[in-house]
Amino acid sequence: MHELSGRPGRYAPWGIALVLVIMVMLVLVVMVRALVGVTHASSFKAQNHYRRAVALYLMESALADTLTQLESRPDWVEGFDRKVLGQTPGHYSLHFNTTGEPFEPTDSVNNLTGSEPADGPRGEDTVAPRTADLVLVAEVGSVTRQVEVTVGLGVTETPPTP
Image 1 (cartoon, one colour):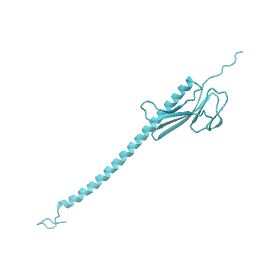
Image 2: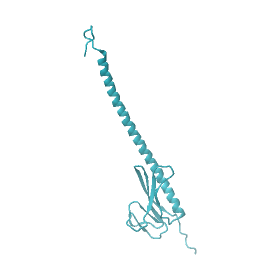
Image 3: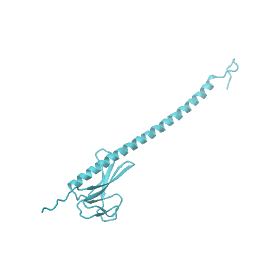
Image 4: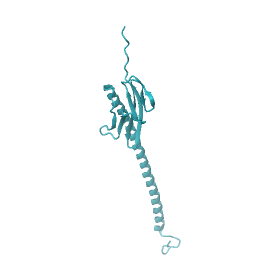
């Protein structure tokens, strides 16, 4: 460093100021990068939570939609393929195995009108008479929710009259 003219032992103040400014800038850069990282992680967590919540609501809507269809037509087997609810992101699906091919884990079986047990994804005779084994799948972005529900008709047999 250079000495100031006329005063021995005193150094130019801009040299120390430059070092301090560089140190402060380094600290600020580290803090800004940390803030950006935390903000990005928080945003990702919030988006993931949002998708999981929407998938749950879609799952509930899929079940309500399916039960409505089955109440009006107990032999209903059309299902839903990536059905969307208005402006809601994501979709839900329900597929019945009506082809006779081997069952997939996501296949549903409608045996509401049957009087004998039916084959299902878990094996032979696993779907009781007058029940439906439903596998509903909701997808929102990278989040997938799947639920399996067994429902019955609720029909009671009337005893024979004497």
